[in-house]
Image 1: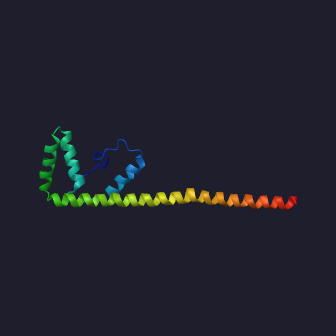
Image 2: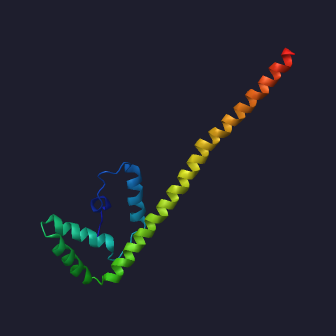
Image 3: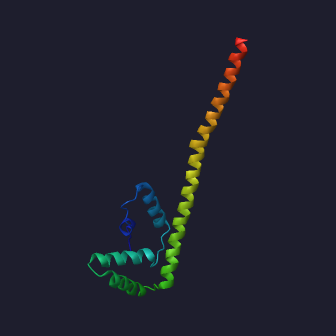
Length: 131
């Protein structure tokens, strides 16, 4: 079953399309091949789009999924799998952000300190020359 992940998640209100796409890519690259939460959600959304009541759509999607060996345990296991993927992406983002801050902010602070020290050195030289 082909899944277009953008159809499964509402991207409205996302301030950064690039980050949203990166998260979807991580989910896609680590997707479970057998019946899982994402495929269940796709079935549910498809049934809702047909005009089916949400509660009935959820039950119908689940009953249909059970014919493929899906059950509550596999549902929760796959949900935890995808939560862990997103958690790893969050950690990677935090690490990258920390590196960006280090490279951009702390390096500028170091440059400011060097310029300040150079300024003090030049002031000392000027005072020495004036004496």
